[in-house]
Amino acid sequence: MKELIKLTARPKLNEPNLLAVWPGVGNVAIIIATYLTAKLNFKDLAAIQPASFFDPTGVLVEDSIIEAPQFPQSKFFYRKNDRLGGSDLIIFMGDDQPTAKSYDLANCVLDLAVRFHVQKVFTCAAALTRIHHTEQPKVWGVGTNQMMVNDLKRMNLKQKGNLQIAGLNGILLGAAKEREIDGICLLGEVPQYASRMPNPMAALAVLRPLSRMLDIEVDLVELGRVAEETREKMKQAAAEAMGQYIDYFTQPIWEQGQDENGEEDEEE
Image (tube, rainbow, N blue to C red; front, side, top):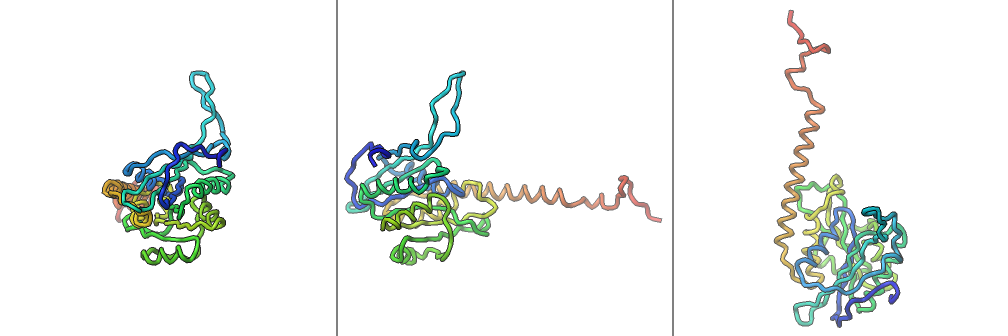
């Protein structure tokens, strides 16, 4: 860990939980972590040396001068719980997922979790479904063992049985299971047709139960406002797309009587 992780602080944390996030469908996890670090008092904890997991694909040149290779950042932040005896929280945020060495990066994150005696590891992701963007997203929950699944059932979270979680938001929990570390992934429903758009609606739905699991209190008003604005934009985009579809595939009634030369048929 000493070679791959650079510690910037050595706090004494009380039974901390770890929330780890990377970019993914709908950016659900990144939206959640960004919101938490903006609203709550988090401090720098550590950073992973990126060159061990990422290969640069090129370099930038400014004023004919080549700059050093740029790498995605992978950083840890921590926050002590305001409530006496409450669990502290570590957040890991990765700017990008490596094309290779994902499993190695997952274990590097877990090395720090073990160093600070993390109790549970949490990730978030999107669940692509046939939900419409005007509907309230449901939240699915999966765990690394039956005890975690029972915790999810007690919170009335949707159980989905068999599924696959792509990328490091899933791989991390697989590695945690190997190391006998408890883990949970919460997945917010995202429309299949809107998978490339940031989805604060799903992020808000996930953050509600997640905040209870992490033993934190956070004001969700601002995220709720952003979610509603995004939903309205999606409604407008859908209406415009439908209008274009109708214009393209339908013929105005006043043109239906015209022949191929553009002349109207005459009645005899």
